[in-house]
Amino acid sequence: MSTTIGRNEKCPCGSGKKYKKCCGKGAVVQLDELLDKELKELQGDIIRYTWSHYESEIEDYLQEHDKNFAIPDEAKEVFEFCALTWFATSHAKNGKTVMDEYLDAHSKTISRPKVKEMAEAWRNSYPSVFRAVSLDNGKFIIVEDIFTNETSQVKLLEREYLPEQGDLLMATVLSSEPAVFFGTFFNIPANFADEIEREILALYKDTGSGNPISFMKESFLLVLERFMFPEPVTLLEGWEWPSQKHREVAEAYQEYIKEIDDSKKLANLGLTLWSQYSAKANPAIRNPQIYTAALIYLILSHSQVPVAISQKQLAEAFGTSAGSISSKYRDMKKALVDELKEVEAITTSA
Image (tube, rainbow, N blue to C red; front, top):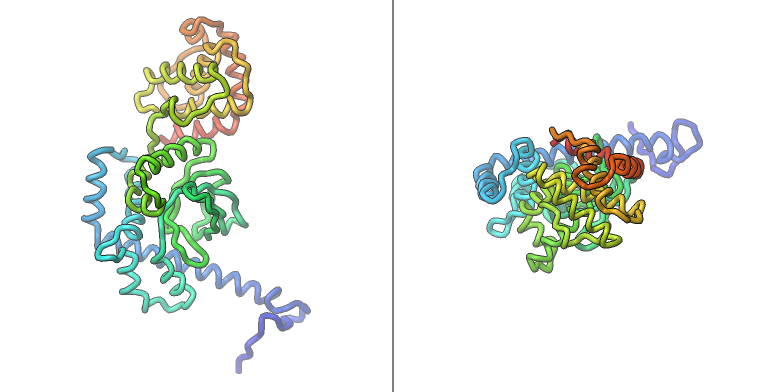
């Protein structure tokens, strides 16, 4: 004969504590882990179902998108996976998404009531771009939607890789209780998130859409492309500089670096670093040429590019001294320790 123990009763182990605060606590943790495992398995099944039933349609969308923007081979796997999660939750046919279709056919096979309840709520899902606000014990993340500025809590089913505060995330949120990401998220480190956020919001504004959810469902692949491969920075749009001389440094840097890097990646990274340094140090600039040369040396020294330019060569090119460039380079390097680590990580993995 089995006896049911109430959560608020004394624990039978003799500790004197309530069951829920003692031996029952472990049972709750185990149940929570079991639920997470079943939810991940269910998501995996939905992803397999989507690909097996709609592979040709998804590939058609990707090929059409490829006509305007060729995704690099090393990034195709990530791009295609994100596209698949979008297709499953946002692409409706006859008023139903693939998620609806799957749940209509398989919901009855889900045995655990909590998992079934959450899965049914997944019909109300949406892709968006978020800022990571904070983490709660590595299990939950508070995010802020960049379009609406609304905050929400999302449970992390995968915890091997955690975003950091301020990171920019692109993901599909499954609106259950608790909410979870579909599959995973794609993130940009906080140090390089501002420019990408500005670009995505500008794209949203240009479309004239008044509904961010509709915009993301309709323009997901384009936003994902911008998220993974930002367009070249345009100095006249979106950037604010403390003074005209700060702006002159940015313009001269962009002009010089484009002769070295056709992909514009170094332009984006260098201008972002200059913006961050300007905000941190707010240098009183007398000779913009010195700062431009120091910024060029800084970015080339910390990125994986097959170009070696000495401080002496830069001094000759910008009509200043190697000593002056070295001094400003050291100032920038000291102020941007964390940011330079991100530059090295980005350019090494590219």
